[in-house]
Length: 105
Picture 1: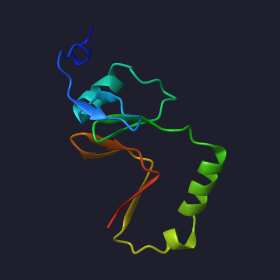
Picture 2: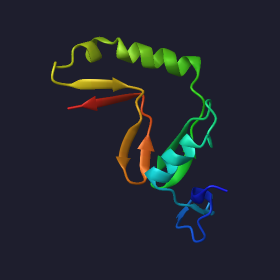
Picture 3: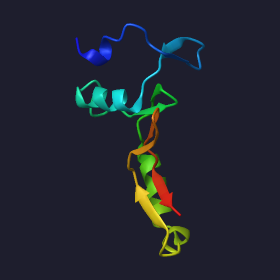
Picture 4: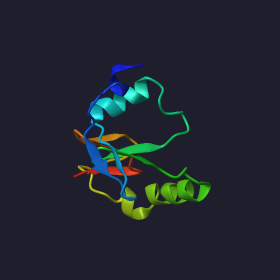
């Protein structure tokens, strides 16, 4: 068994259902991904140390995202505002997000 799964005493986080769950660090989350713990079709974020599965993106989701990207408001942003699309964002030691858009103001 890999060292990341052999931890004896696990810090916990309180899930929405009230069940204590292991609290993961960003380094552990990234190592799980390297080890193939998540399938290619899995969409998982790490929020406050908790693994949070995301619903699959639908055609409607992608259509709305595309319309937003091509909107007049998005095209009219000042040149010093950067917009990244669908990148992983490492916010802190226990949070990794995959937002549809990320603006650098």
